[in-house]
Length: 443
Image 1: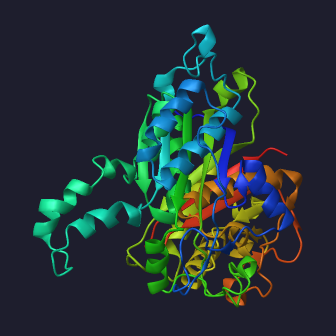
Image 2 (image 1 turned 45 degrees about the vertical axis):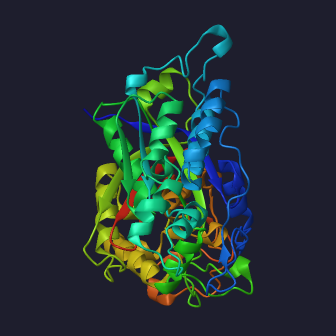
């Protein structure tokens, strides 16, 4: 069975603000949301800038009993999970599906078959908040101040929050969001770092295309604004060290880039079988024509120099969509500003697109947000659907000296015309995973 798939709902919480429109506005205006790290003392870190999400309420806009569920369980939701729940809620509410009136005794989303509503979410490693471990580790120390396993067993572990593990499991994004919206259909969590959000869209689209669901929520969420993660990426020489002007720190595909910028956020989309969406008169943002995935064995902290994972994902997406490279109107690339990752992505695009790589406009949004990890690909899809429908491709913020080695038609300085309504979105993770999607945007 093969079905057309459309996108009917968008949700996002990013450094640019709450809501998909806030993200699109920041990209359109070329307004960076990167600033000094304020969540913890980063004064001794080489990288001291980040894209931090603003304060948000994951229970805003939902039904009263859903809000009670969120407030009751917030203690077992790390920030990554809270971001995911908020983005999914926004996407569902944006889809136009009636949420149901509890006063009339209606269940949540009363007009759908919940066995045909599923969810796939891209996630990553969630590090423990240091405050959660401070007291137990201190209790485990002996008279000499040294930590011992004996002390941990006798005194330390008793200080641990009993439900501690539930706060950091990377499948809890889909768990909580699925409970809130009674998603009884196929469910999965993909711990594939930067590629997670777009790989979730890939898998969710395939589930609908096979006829196993009519609605699928897909997206990604991650917070990298954490002292352990920032230190880890600093030690791996992956983060920008241009701290003096935070707004200019993230420079995708720029010759003078110094690294990626740690960021946090979540983005989600409601995918829907086209016949179902059209029957209910849903607003349609665009159609998913084809998706693809690829991976390599470059190494856990490496990118393949020839971009083979990206090339594989792009070729598969184009083939599934029955689209030629020259037909594309634009490309929204991952573009993290970490040089090996940028170079790998560019090489993959050149390999998959051939001569069209020199002519199709290429943009990227991380100069605005920083690298939100697993949320990135889904956020870039949201931007493609909201912005490119206006017929213009926004420039890459902070790319003032495009790296000639990229060999791509990078959009810099000012917006470029959109060549057609077909847009390619790509994601690639350090370590080898890659994803791509071809969408037809509604102008």
